[in-house]
Structures are given as structure tokens and as C-alpha cells.
Amino acid sequence: MARRRSRPIPRGPWPSLPLSGADRTGLRRRANPLDPAVSLGKTGLSDGVKTQILRAFGQSPLVKVRLVKEEGEDRREAAARVATAVEAELIGVLGRVAVLYRPPADDRDDG
Image (cartoon, rainbow, N blue to C red; front, side):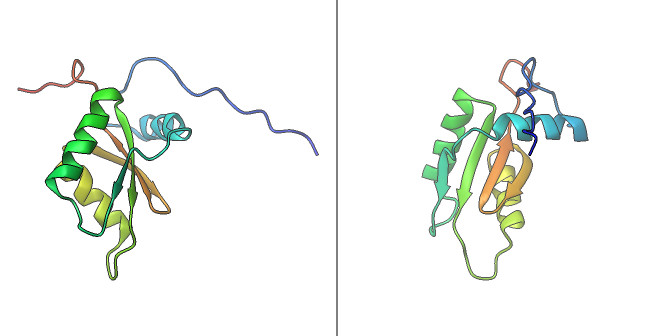
């Protein structure tokens, strides 16, 4: 069986908002080797969890968040709620892990 060649992880500047489909694909590829930085527990999105996510954004524009299983809640909806709360863009949800993106502070237009 022929071995599949892996493409290098894209480098270069971080994309600005709004994101195109190609930007999202590139960000998902960049996030692939990352481990979840924050776990969202059964208590939900508390101030402490928001602080942890914002601290993680201080180190990298891409953050993975692990979501716990809650009865009757769609994981995509839960991930979208987290993204809105921390003013980030939801890049994707795979299983119970959500990938969030927030452009670096020097690229953002904060007013």
C-alpha cells in the first residue's frame, strides 16, 4: 500500500475576520496537533472557564475546548454558545472538541 504524503501545516499570517472556507480549512489543519486547553465541565460556562479560555487565547489564536456530554444539548449549539461568550469564531466541532479562533490582538480592530 502506498504511503500517503502528508502536507505541511500551513504557516504564515493569521487570517482576519470574516473567514472564508479556505481560511477555516487552514485553521482546522493548524489546530489538528493541538490538545484541548480547557475542559468545559458540568457546571457549564462559568467565569473561571471564560478566564481560562481568554488566557489560552493570549498564548495562541487557536484554542481547543473539550465539551462534556449533557442531556438534551447539541454539542454544536454548546460550542457556539462558548464562542459567543468569549467573542471568538467557531471553526469546527469534532466529537466533543470544539476549535475556536480569535485573531491575534494586533490584527483585531477593537474600536
